[in-house]
Length: 208
Image (cartoon, rainbow, N blue to C red; front, side, top):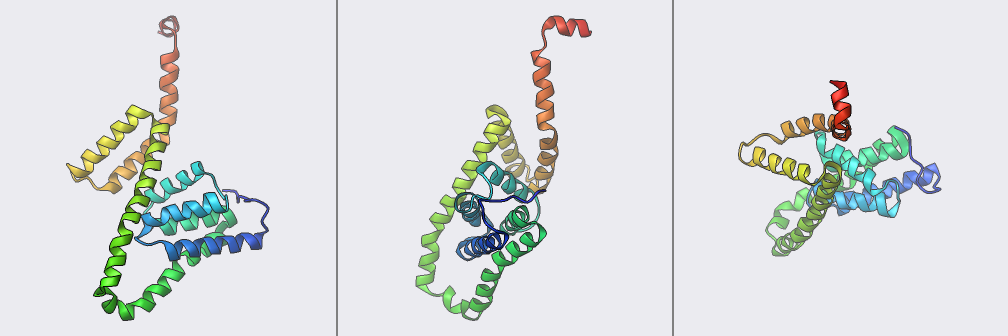
């Protein structure tokens, strides 16, 4: 994969931009990996314009499909796209180091914080914000599915996944593998189907 060259920044400036972006997402990301996704999207797409919305959707899809923390995977992927393997290492370290230090620091006073009414109120107050952020990501992702697969096929796959997971208790990892395999041949199958439908009856008769 080729390194991308966002704007006219030097290599040193790109490193500092990457570090600053990943530190901000690591510090401000409250509520786990999914809540960090909009923050990474803002940094990568809007602030520094490393990638566009479509490329970000591809990075997100790949990160969701692979095992492990999604925010860390996205940080590594963006760092790799920007500055290669060193960029991936720098991005991951910059993303996880601030929160790791904060966790170690707060462990000594966690009992006090857990019983504080102020802290409990802060957690309850920020919960709706996290829900809205995750909902926005889900909406954008669903919109991409509809545009990529088509309206009716997208609805069918969404309903199928819901039924298999909620009613038949099928593990999500199995669905991910199945749909990854299907996605690798989806467009080639669709092209063949369109070509077949586009043939004139006389052409089909001649082929027979």
